[in-house]
Length: 210
Image (cartoon, rainbow, N blue to C red):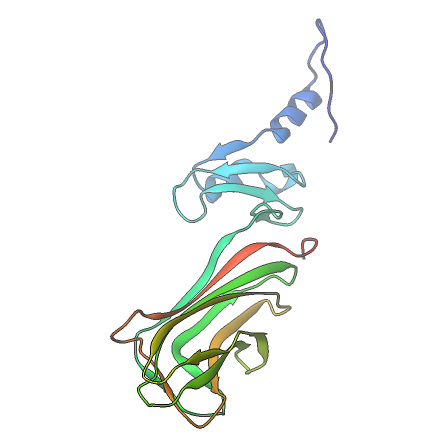
């Protein structure tokens, strides 16, 4: 679909009017309304419309040749979040799940994701301890390793960090797991302090649309 320059006195042809229509951003109250008006034979690759329904789908959608999607070259925001509200004693050098922080979402292989982690830790004993945290899929395969955190004797802190990752698995579980680097223990105090949380954001494309 090209662009046509109209001069004074030119008769506007139907084909030109259709090109103008397809190059405008047209508002629709719902996706069903959009699909009922712009039927499949009339959709153009790259055509943009706006949904005005005021829910999570509110905003621009682009026809990519097979489906309506969000604009590819923009961040898509919150993907999924998990929260732990109970305490967990981290005592083992064998990895374990952080209770309550298991997420399940649909991923795209050519997009970047950023995980934000917030964990309250308390060391009740008189010995400092170092703990490792990492993200895995449902089968336990590591997706991203997070910085180690050391908690001083009889001290407490909020462990907050973030990591950017990609994944080739479309629909998958992402878990937050821990592993102690020694024989001492530390407590994730999620019940009486801030809740522990894992928030995963879509931050933009890493390559061409998949």
